[in-house]
Length: 214
Ligand SMILES: Nc1nc2c(c(=O)[nH]1)N[C@H]1C(S)=C(S)[C@@H](COP(=O)(O)O)O[C@H]1N2
Ligand SMILES: [Mo]
Image (cartoon, rainbow, N blue to C red; front, side, top):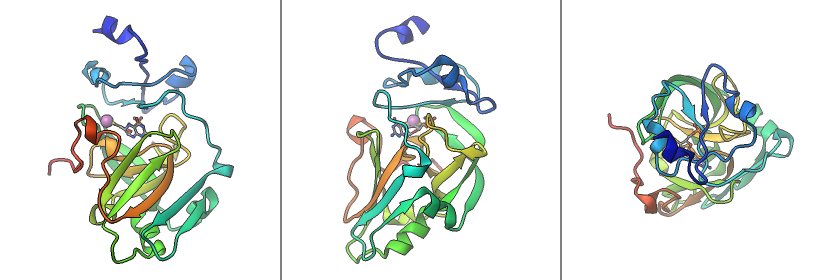
């Protein structure tokens, strides 16, 4: 098992939610789990840092920008400070990866996606929301109805602190009530579309409907 994981480009980083600094101890490791094999290692209630790409550039909060565009009447680009100035929503909820691992009672805080959608004034044809990542590869989507749920957050905080780079900071999605793959890390754009566009994982076998079983 560990031998298999040691092969090739598959790097392992497991972060404890108590000290989430393991990756900084290990240095800049490529964090990948394309096979989902990491989930077979009994690490307990810890996050596995996932990235489908290699090293992702670090984006300082000061220069971070989040455009909300597409089928909207009022496109707008938010700075980090703009997002901080919007109504803050905080809650505690489990993070659940489709490969089986989960982290209970994660503290999340940020701006409800619903808030940004209302400010953008969706046009009549808008039916879905697409998320982009500044890793340059990852995309995900939700229906407009799913996107408006109360537990869908443009997250500035995770685990009670600003979202770390490894977890997709400075700003990531947290799509509550959905599998983790819907929660795009290193969020770089939100676009309203007339239909749901399959993201990174859908052609690789994950359902476009990522909702957790009730
Ligand atoms: N940009 C990007 N976002 C991503 C992923 C990824 O590889 N790249 N992996 C997804 C998956 S499958 C999971 S389970 C979570 C993992 O979040 P974490 O790395 O903070 O544990 O991020 C999701 N968002
Ligand atoms: Mo996942």
